[in-house]
Image 1 (cartoon, rainbow, N blue to C red):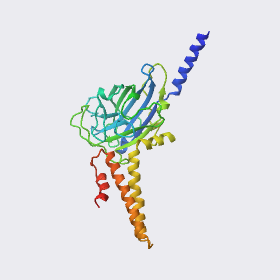
Image 2 (cartoon, rainbow, N blue to C red):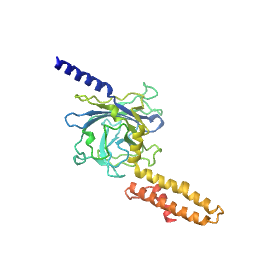
Image 3 (tube, rainbow, N blue to C red):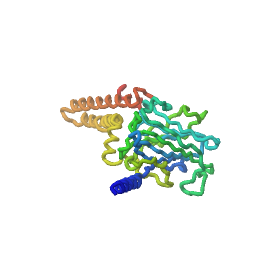
Image 4 (tube, helix red, strand yellow):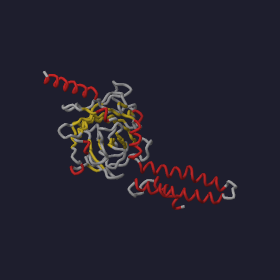
Length: 334
């Protein structure tokens, strides 16, 4: 009798764990307006054999052209991210490429190797083209300009993914940061897994990249049996996900993860938007100590600029590659 009660209790716990676990989903529906268009869903599964969490992911990209690439990456920045990069020609009859890469800084991503994995293992279960349904008209398979629309459908499982040694992937995180990135102009001469990729548009907000957040806790399944791949639900842009950090802990984690970026923005912003203008006001104040106030404020402002430049160079790995960085250096030359 006790055995029956114990079995019934375990069965109830199993059913509850299945009911509570829900795949999380993040999508951007921009194809008709010539913007990025992808959808991805994640389920985390507690692997009782390894003791780590496996990540089951579905990933779909809508496109009408062979140009460019679309990527989703774990973590708040490129460094140490686990990257899933899709490219290919939907009209070629050849399956889309899903290149899995990482990078040590803001450089060209490279293919992952067994040495990178740290005990995790990744398998691509599916990669295929399908006619894509328009978000505006489910019966339409053409873009607004009349070109055919296709959807690259991919499925991946990352075993013991929480052991990834790069940017942490935490099943316990209610605000796990991810990055999406996109280039719609590159003409790839060959569709290989190690193809050289041109950069996305540089600044956030320009349509080339962005950050989003996932409540992975919501997606965790503790069942003994392996879960199904997360279904992608048509027309739903966010489910357990957000474009901003989720909750207070997510905000604090975001600030901590982007400490250098935030410091760079703070010091440069404070110098140019506050201290330099206050210095001008001080010298024109008419006070007998106007010059003293002016030079003290200017010295503090220049110190802020120096710290801002140093943090900016640190972020870019001490390389000056974009106009933004040259502009940062102008006050130093002046």
